[in-house]
Length: 157
Length: 443
Ligand SMILES: Cc1cc2nc3c(=O)[nH]c(=O)nc-3n(C[C@H](O)[C@H](O)[C@H](O)COP(=O)(O)O)c2cc1C
Ligand code: SF4
Ligand code: FES
Image (tube, rainbow over all chains, first blue to last red; front, side, top):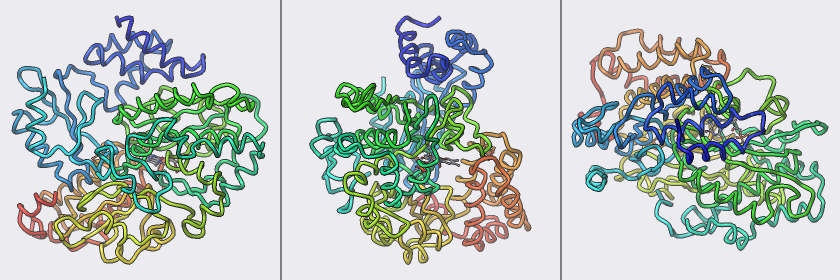
């Protein structure tokens, strides 16, 4: 179900916790699985649960509780923009509108070619860099003014 | 932000900085930290075999208060850890920084990670903890990876693991990441999350010091709290205390955001006037007038600008102004801002992030958001402000964790200080604060 490389990453995460507390690695394991598969299907979640020796429902609860897991397919690139108040004061709403216009989609939508999914997000803990965007969960881009967004989109594969 | 493009001027965080002193953005590695005198405090404790109780006494003397929001004295918290306990005890660093407006732990972790590691080692020595975890906000993955690198450096140099520097102290440290849930910043939600569950806060008591991670005694402190510890041990609790004010020892990193020319982190002595911080941040953007300030992260009550300009930044002074120093996240709001719209966005946040296990919080945050939303969109009704107060009052003090209060306090303070703006929205179905264009500029 998951590649050897992914399983190795999950094993490395598991090693951080006491031997009888493998479940502590479930968040890390689901991140690894999401990265390989693009999103977390029920089968993948069940596989992860089995791998860590926990009940499937417990893994499913985790996958639904934390906002950055994708239970449905997303575009090749997932862009999350923070619109919380500190960012909004510094231009996040204009940035979000610009993104929607350029991509021709609203929040929680994917471009017709399946390339980009756009989401609204809560504070990243980077409010001094507003507007800020998270690209595929792991890369943060800062000071995303409309001009910076144009440049960013032009360079995105 | 002032620190976004390394290398930056090492004076950028302010002349009084101790945690962020001398940082350029590039000198974060072990060798750089050691060159700045890093790990000397730990070595001193180990070499002189200073008693754990003496370490705790020093931290108590420093009046270091928890930097994660509640301001609880760190030394006192450490003293709650049971001395005689057979089995593992844990130390957890709370780097789940997600309180809107707060972005200081990110800079500590990426530009000076070893000071957090050294602070945790000293805390482990003082509390008898055998292993530690740093729970890092999921949204800052690159910083999580850097922290893992710093841990590897410290382990290779003998600072972590079995028999630290041959002293007999053993302490393992690992990084754990979140994945997008604000509530995991609450310490017991965080512990649940670390156990591989939903991050739903626990009833307290029992407190983590008696029943924490995996049911073991656990101390949870904020990143900045641990980061201050090496300086305290190296220079003495009294010296740290004297940097600030009585009961408000040391320096504090303020994250200033919103309508200022130079948003960013500034490390100031506690008790520094707010006006000074505003000046360091270049003043209100575009020379406009200051309208309001949220001085301690989005959960803190809003304070009118005039009042804030007369307030000093320490726990007690900000409390006197009717708010909280909280995490030190200072959100600056200028005259072009619609306060109804600002509150609407905050209310949405708490509604979205409530973990749902207490009825007053789950239902109340939804109610508050819907009422503020209808006022903002011109559909407010007479009586809505009383209703808002009512809902807020029904949340306060009736929930498992402080998120309920955190959602209610902004609502009450926004309405209390800017009631006429809310009333105008209700009566006229539109905003008092100028044209839609001006609002767009502000929003
Ligand atoms: C809803 C909520 C969110 C919180 N978020 C954080 C956070 O992001 N970081 C943090 O250190 N403390 C946060 N806290 C406070 C923690 O529960 C805890 O008091 C703190 O980590 C203890 O460390 P300290 O004493 O060093 O401040 C939060 C509390 C609540 C109720
Ligand atoms: S107050 Fe809200 S966030 Fe806290 S435990 Fe209750 S429902 Fe969850
Ligand atoms: S409010 Fe956007 S990163 Fe904090």
